[in-house]
Image (cartoon, rainbow, N blue to C red; front, side, top):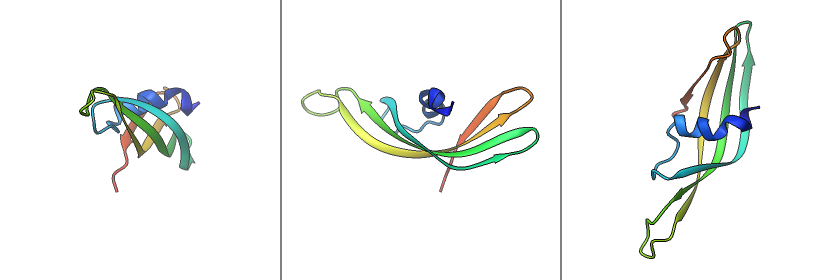
Length: 87
């Protein structure tokens, strides 16, 4: 289910650093806790960031990157919130 939301999760977590388009490649679940009223997941996302026209040939540049995000899902309302994990 999380893979469907990966592009939005990357965008809202401000994972990119170049201002380009973000394309998720792989998801890994680091930890997950299931409580009575909420579900919390700590996930790692490998992604590519493609930035148009940033080198001397005006060709797109691709950066391979990784970020970690904490996702909180409120079970009664199904509302999801997230925050980027900081080391």
